Amino acid sequence: MRRLPALCRAVAVLALISALAGCAAKQPGPPTADEAKAVYGTFLARDRQNTAPAFSLSGSMSFSRANRSGRLNYRLFGNAGGATRLDLTTPVGGAYASLFEDNRGFYAFVPDKNAVYRHSDSRQGAAKLGMPLPFSLSEMAAVTSGRFEALAPARYASAKKTAEGYEYAFSGGTRLSSLTLDFAGNPRHLVGVGIEPWRIDFADDEAGPGLTAPVARRITLTTPGGATLVVRVKTVQPRPSPYPAADLELPVPPNAAEHALDGAGDEPSLPEL
Image 1 (tube, rainbow, N blue to C red):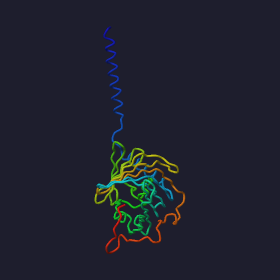
Image 2 (cartoon, rainbow, N blue to C red):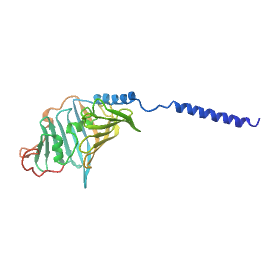
Image 3 (cartoon, rainbow, N blue to C red):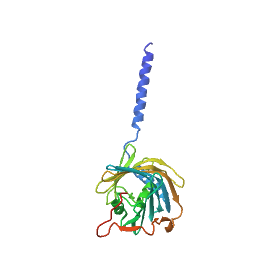
Image 4 (cartoon, helix red, strand yellow):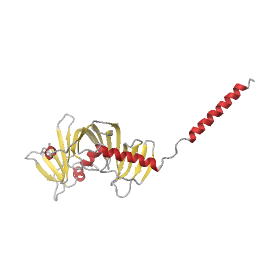
């Protein structure tokens, strides 16, 4: 009779092991194609929901490249897929530079030089002024405000599950090589195609007025050559109607010098933005 408690304990242990084994057998296996497709579909849907006719963003930018670093405040505003303006100011509020792009090209006014610089291509023009960005101003505004229709394809080539979500690979001439989404369809990492791969990391998601999905409030861009740009988004304001053209014009004085960045002959001494 004294052996009964020991026997009972043995039976209980066996029952527990059997229950745990049954639970383990019910654990989900590797992600199915349908699961990966559903997450990507959620991402595309939220991308469409965040689209507005116009936008305004503000915050700060911290940059570093080689032995140079700094911090600026910014306001990025314009019309979705159209004219876009970026105003940069110093931490104490002084005007630093104003950049603009539309279907005619890229323009940058630098008050310290009292000069406006222009180029037919936004990315090439910004790079000549010391801003090697892998996308245009309007694309930068879209990514910063949580819209990816200009970069992310409607279809992916393959998908794999990671610790934080799903990593999607692309092919067929797209500018992206991969995009990582969390399980809710929010972007976490984006890797682009170029001479060298560039990468964007998204963090600190937060909702805001007028937004149907949260947007990342800290965006880190690592560009070819080792330059790093950290964009902190303080405000995101969708606008129900487009900006009038006059609201987006650069504040260029009548006596400002003009320089073509893609013209023939010697180029002027260029500022390093």
